[in-house]
Image (cartoon, rainbow, N blue to C red; front, side, top):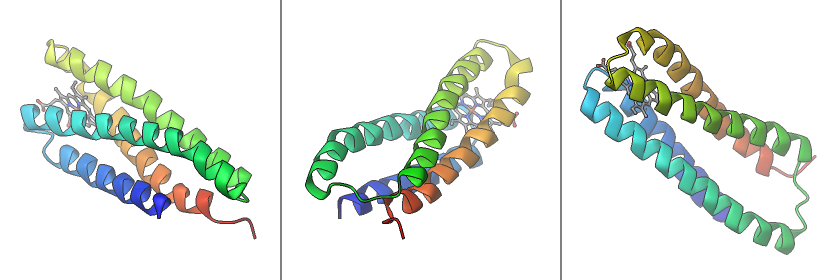
Length: 129
Ligand code: HEM
């Protein structure tokens, strides 16, 4: 049940981000939607961190450790890229139009990794066979 709530939020974040990319020409809206997606993702990480220890204690986690490591690595990389997205985005607002291409490439990389984070979360919570 708990995993479902987290994964549902994760899917909503992916859709929010997709919407933010779709409206990228509308600068004001793009910034609002992307900020919402990033903040929601950080809150989701906090929710997982705060509940994971409880889950581990309760179930003695017989989950797939390798899958969990892969998933966490991709998730951490995504959050690191959020930092670069915020930084390059802020620079573009200040007039550094030349950074748009970089922001775009980093943006699609970040979005792809975020989808991978979502997909690998199913693998990570599945019991090892
Ligand atoms: C994961 C988060 C983000 C993704 C995936 C993303 C993605 C993109 C993409 C694909 C573009 C279009 C670039 C182009 O076609 O030249 C864009 C434009 C832009 N982004 Fe982001 N972005 C993100 C976060 C942010 C943030 C946090 C800010 C602001 C602090 C920001 C500010 C901008 C600005 C100012 C533009 C130029 C818009 C224009 O055409 O006037 N982005 N972004």
